Amino acid sequence: MITTLDPHSRAAYRGWSDITIRNLFVIPTILFLIVFNIFPLLYSLGYSFTDFRASTKDPVNFVGLRNYMELLSDPNIWSNFTITAQYVIVSVSGQVIVGFGLALLLNRSFPLKGLITTLLLLPMMLSMAVVGLFWKLLYDPNFGIINYSLGLGKLEWLGDPNIALYAVALTDIWMWSPFVMLLSLAGLSAVPKHLYEAASIDRASRLYTFFRITLPLVAPILLIAIIFRTMEAFKTFDLAYVMSGQPTTEVVSIRLYKMAFQEWQTGKSCALAYIVLIMVLCITNVYVKYLNKAKER
Image (cartoon, rainbow, N blue to C red; front, side, top):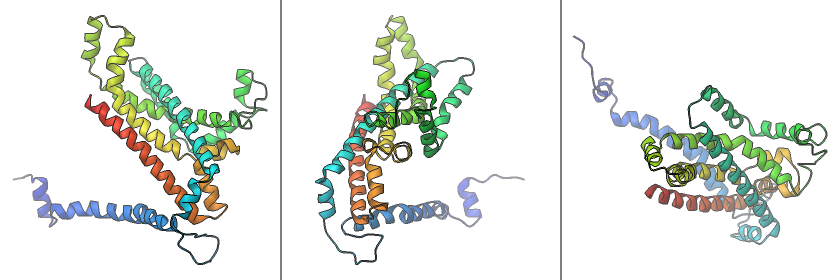
């Protein structure tokens, strides 16, 4: 006679309690987070209050808040933050518009929908450095296909300080709009169909239906996409570093890299990293408040 045991009985039969099995999964995860996340975070926090330089063996001196005060009073650092803010606004806005627009187009049945959706997702699966080099060739004033297709002659997309930042942001939009599209598609597919049927019976216009049904119901998941992309855009490094060396594209992550690994101001670079972290947390907190309000509607 064959009997089946519930999970609790099977665990007890093998001599392992539920708590033991839980700990086998939880404890290694906690240790991993402590070793690779929390410990470096606290370690760098300590260095941010010192004049430590990784390139020398000089004794480390505690300087208190001096690194933070010098950074916050440095106009060049604020220039980097301004460039970063411009990049984030252009990049994230473009991704939301393009991504959500593609989701609206794909939110219907048509032949080869699955294949087209998969092809649209390919850009975000590529390496950032590879995408940067690829678009750098496309922007090339001598043999780049963009200038040739648009008839722009030898326009220096990455060499002109006035448009270099927007050229990098355009690349970021191309790469990460599929991410917004994917989340938006999930939100659109969850909208109850009977709401559209009721709006159709009431002869509501498409514009009214979009702003009163589609957008409010998709807003929470769209805000989640905006949160993720804002955090990533604020920390962007690869594209701007690979594609352009213009001062107008020196986002704060590039300044942080130069300070840490070219100027070897390790303590001050740790302080700058924490300033960036605090700013990202503040921006994210604002988004989360709007997200909670959108969920309550």
